[in-house]
Length: 254
Image (cartoon, rainbow, N blue to C red; front, side, top):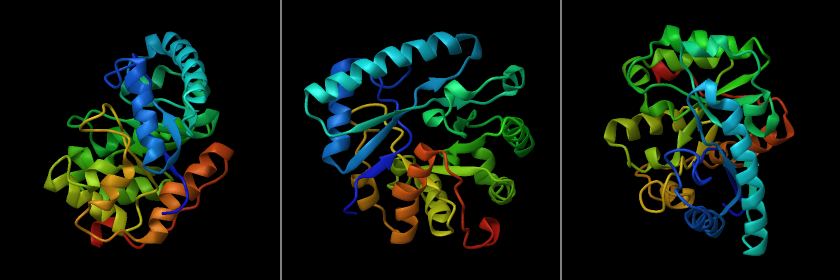
């Protein structure tokens, strides 16, 4: 992978959530990303409670500007982009304005759910609501949700309705156990990995070295799939262009 990769999911911005705790750690994570082949890092702190969204947005903007200046001063060759990872539950139905919280101000919005409680019907309703605003949901780390692990057909149904998927690089490397790794492998090999993300939180376990994870999977990664997930599709987010997917079949049947 000679080109510089795009990491669309990280918790690198310090003091925003359960990710980086201070500016020094943030700078080290950014340096690690750049050194390991990432050229663009999306900063996507958790947005879990909508009553705090405006304050969280303002806080992110201030820290984003500071980090940009520090990266320039430190001569770290890393482009940073704005975003949030939004926790979806039924409170989402009370929200009428999402644009400040999308990736790069685009139509693409990175979302997550509780790992154990939701059903397919819940997730579909939340995604359909977001799409009613002209947004395209990107479901973060689908390989880690219990309802997907128990119902492969949910992936097919959500995909057919235009939802996209982001796989954690650490899942592919086995960081979250065999079941999650097997599901991630299936997602990747069946053409359902629209994006990769580090989901970086810290310097030790969940860091920004996507290359290390992808180079240490026990299965072969298709170069065309990597090209789309790490380079082509993320650039379409930044340009706010339509992303066309090509699945290799039905996920539940492969």
